[in-house]
Length: 422
Image 1 (spheres, one colour):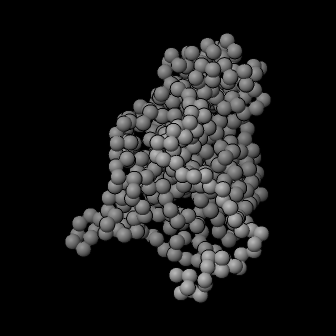
Image 2 (cartoon, one colour):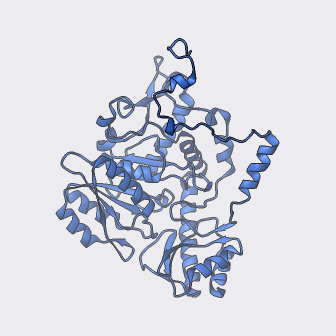
Image 3 (tube, rainbow, N blue to C red):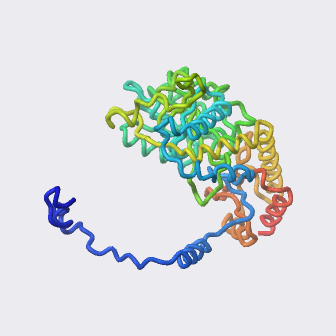
């Protein structure tokens, strides 16, 4: 091959690369046998600290995952499947994505969904990009959203030259009066809020959405999918786009991924949805079939002309969410959400008795912020010594706690007792 293209050696092929940037020796150790490699990986894994009881959320949640989920998603046909471009041989994968999209639409009350994106932060940033046009380049972001999501949005907007303006939070929720002022001062492309927000507070989404629409801005809601089983859907709140992190839908914590960004939109916004969308059609014999639709976007046009450069999706994670939702059903998902709600409120009352009072007196779902004169580090250490991961410290003696259906009454009372003792 080298001779055919006019070179005598590999050094000649790479002669145009400056010598000072070439790596001459990689210092790669000798290979290991399977048994030795497994032993080494297990030793590394033992460094991880695993908690049997978790009372922390902040974007990643410890929910029970029915056994059927892993049983289905671990099938070789799904695990090894790649891109479903060849529709004639990819009907199974395409249908699984189509069913996932349908469930996301039912969950959010929106008209269309894509085949997922990388994670919740990416979904939020892509939604902001969907709303920009020549006249409107400013994104208003609630100060009560997850700081990590805000950082992703800032990164995306920096790259595209868009402005990000943070709407202050007041008493744990978006400051409505500050929002009115900012909407009057800016030709905003969109308003993005989190529902429930980072502090667990359930925002008045309908009011915030109506204010955004009155100013000519689009309304984006970042949602907890489990909470949507009880709360009004983004569709009912007037959202133009609904996004969120799909990890609670059957994906384990896994020390941080892979996760799943879900996106759903109104009919008017569907042509701006990034990534892949699977559509239902019929084949030449009139039988039900599935295809990738609305494809002529980021993968098929020049990069600078594209509104998005996402060219992939989280198909296996999306399948996991679809199997989880199928296994839970509407009744099971509502029961899960109700348990999260009731247990979080019981945890809050127990912690109140232990000296950790509620910071924001507002409706919350399964997360809430406490404040105390006690040293949060001491409390967390006492919990960790007993195999419990406590709330997320937010500074100034504040902590963000979370409860899910996995936290028993006994666990909650034990946490309160340890907190009180510490």
